[in-house]
Image (cartoon, rainbow, N blue to C red; front, top):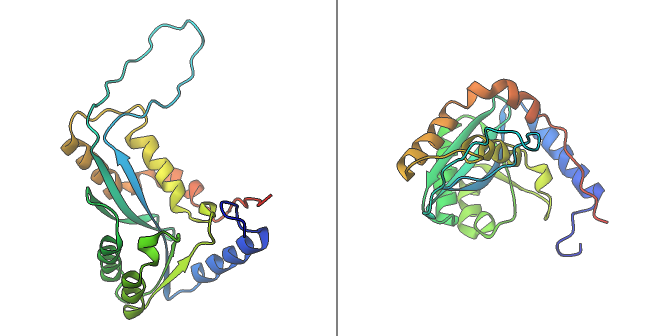
Length: 205
């Protein structure tokens, strides 16, 4: 495969079949995992209004560069999300800590986690811990984020937490983020259409 190019349509379809297979196993929980990074600042998302219309809203912004690193795993069976919020760098130790939290949440289930080929995901310490705890790591084909449903959640998260949204201080920002995930069920109607297993196939050419 050419570096930087999407995998072939056949590779993507074969991976989708694996997703469908594990999602249909009654004794298995299928999770979509990926970190997300939220900078404590406002993202000026575009808003439409007719030219010349009065009432333009001014939104404050922050000058600090602190950010929240979110480790998250999406269970599309019930739209629940397991998260760890931290300012620490995402590395293999953080991933192992997160896998331990997943194991504690689903002690009686076979666990399959879809994740990308980031170095910390593929590290020996990560794979050893997963193997010892009967967690199957199902690595995405390279350059195929379209097959990871949690990417849709991160886009939805940014829309609600940082797009044209101001938090005065970092503590408030962390609390708002934590509260968002703790009450994700409030958005079930929107999420039910967002998390359908209809995957866009990205063509390699």
